[in-house]
Image (cartoon, rainbow, N blue to C red; front, side, top):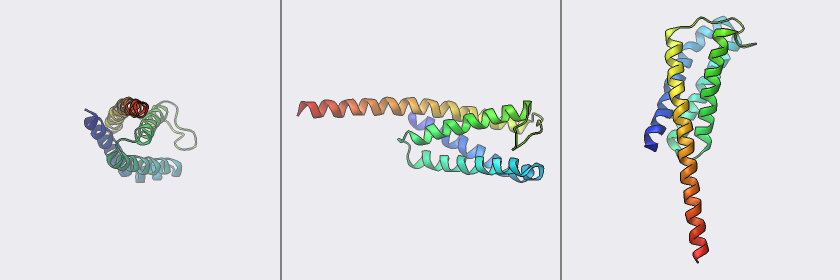
Amino acid sequence: MTRLRQDVVILACAISAGIHAALAPDHFHEATGAGLGFVVATVLLAALAVAVTFWPDHLHAPKLAALVFAGLIVSYGLAITTGVPVLHPDVEPVDGLALFTKAVEIAGLLASLSLLTSIERSSTWASQLLRARSLSH
């Protein structure tokens, strides 16, 4: 089950990174800040996909993935309601691709949070086992 959650996080990062990368040039035409935001999102998401792939048992990657997904979801919420100060001050209309991307990111966020709790539980279990072994010697 843990592997499935890791795969969901990796896939969500990859899909969202690809979409942000594809949309970055258009956002640069609107405003430099918006374009830079899309580039930063692309780089972070791609790096997180790699991190979760190669270091699946570390807590840092799922924590950062959850933080990035939550930030992207909140940012989009602001973009369609009030605009994002400095980066994208104009209110953006809701569109299908954005909604699809947010659905993918919500799945990634939920999988990241679930992965965190499973890693923390297994880490706690392993440390208790090691402590018990050291006390028995």
